[in-house]
Length: 192
Image 1 (cartoon, rainbow, N blue to C red):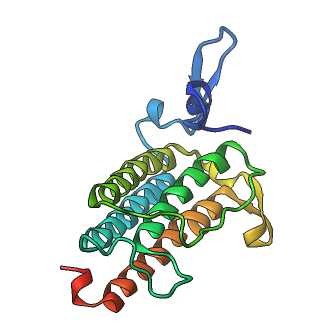
Image 2 (cartoon, one colour; image 1 turned 45 degrees about the vertical axis):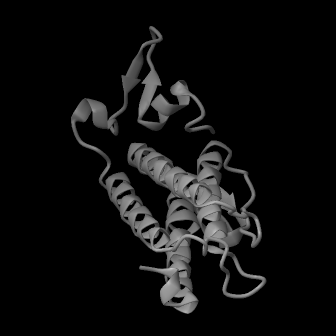
């Protein structure tokens, strides 16, 4: 079951299928034909945009020179958190294409910033992936959201909706909160 690796799967993800003559057709859930989008997919896309905007706002408050600051020696830095959110989005895209993909785990010390431009590039990539994530989520049909998948983090078989909400969006909310707490802990020099 693949969803987004190429144009054909992208069309299937949007509710299209190939008819008898090989032409793309739409089923009853196709937003392009009926002029409406799946309301749940729209809500997920809007939540995705809001969460990403909030994460980027907090990352923009990290002052130059503090990108590698960490609360403790074993915790993630601001840069690690930004990189981890990028990894989480890329993992979600792969999970949609490969339902058997095992969970990913964030790690401290994955990213070392030596110039502000590197941190800005991480944030730019995070912003671009946020736009892509919202578009992918908005394209999902009810059947795709309800598709079953195994995810060990959640005790076995869950829906893709659950993986999206708990495994990606809620996960980002958690790290957004961490970033906000780290900004306070780093003191006034950490944020504007």
